[in-house]
Image (cartoon, rainbow, N blue to C red; front, side, top):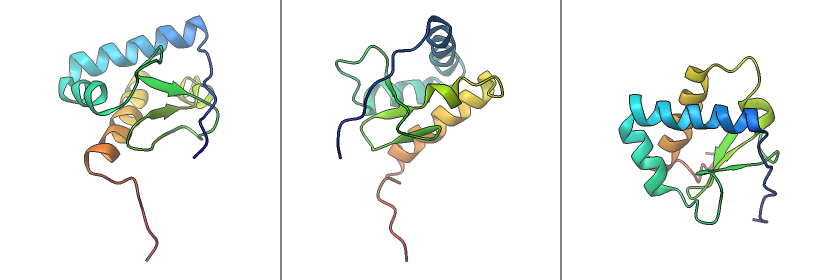
Length: 102
């Protein structure tokens, strides 16, 4: 897999991402711990990689990838963003990365 191009967040998006991380820490501390301990974010400004290479969000078991255009759209509330982030973290926890068709 080729490295994905990282997108720098706008100040508004960075502020909204800080709200997501803070809310996850306050309301779902176990998910916050999992996000910071299971995902590789060394060398990145944020614990997630912001890229337009995914529709909304995805993970490869190492990186939480988020498309800022869709994740920070006006339709997405803080609760929606918490759900999407937690959903992706659970893919890592339950090892739902390599899905195979049957």
